[in-house]
Length: 336
Image (cartoon, rainbow, N blue to C red; front, side, top):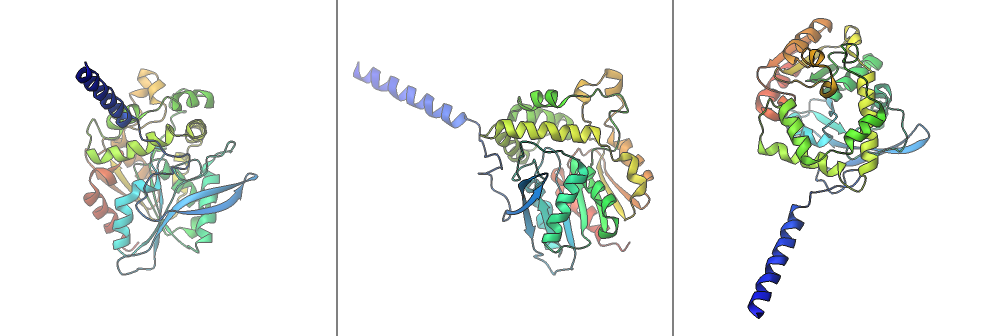
């Protein structure tokens, strides 16, 4: 009997341990607990009647300095940290590299109330760069960061050397093409249900054409851990507000006004389109075709160079970093 009780107790303890191990990783509301690849700093400023903080990395050139600074704009489901290999590559090539987390994202403040606009986020970033004494930067934006980098370049055209975009969303106006509008409350309901499994499934299907690499799991854990952490409700609320901004503030009509040399780095297998999950079948069939959208954007932008990565998805800098960075550096090293 004693042996039986001992075995049973051990089994129960083992099961409890296994359940503890299976608990999802969570992070604080400003991604506390997640390891950034470089030192994380914070810039404090006042905006819309409140004091906010932007997290950012400021990485000095590790190779021979060339005097130029590249500012990295992350995507909606990404953070400054997801630029890890690009940060290292550009630093080794002699660039100073600054990678902020925008307000509402990652290591930055999640306000209870904020009027989100790409103009506001661009102005926040401009203030950060002024505080860091950065003049005439090169901008590199991925996904939603491409929309933001475009808005920044339109607002401060004489203060941007070059603009590069990686699979930017906003190459089409989904609302005008028939995608139904979602209220912020609808977005909030959707965002509160996110977990690692649903994030991974979405990214594998939409971003990577059904493919997956183990190294992507870190970024899924990062996003899910933020969404399921102690700031769950506030994180979801800000995410809902940001989705409304993305859907209702297109930049595609203003590509013609970009004045600086612009590089489009496009994975042609990408199918990202905001709201496609609720779009009518005939609408869904005609949106999110990056093999067409990249070419169309390159024709609209006056001084554009298009580099396509056939068969790659939403994040070619993560799928094939060596190939991606070679294309980026080739363009940066070519006089414009």
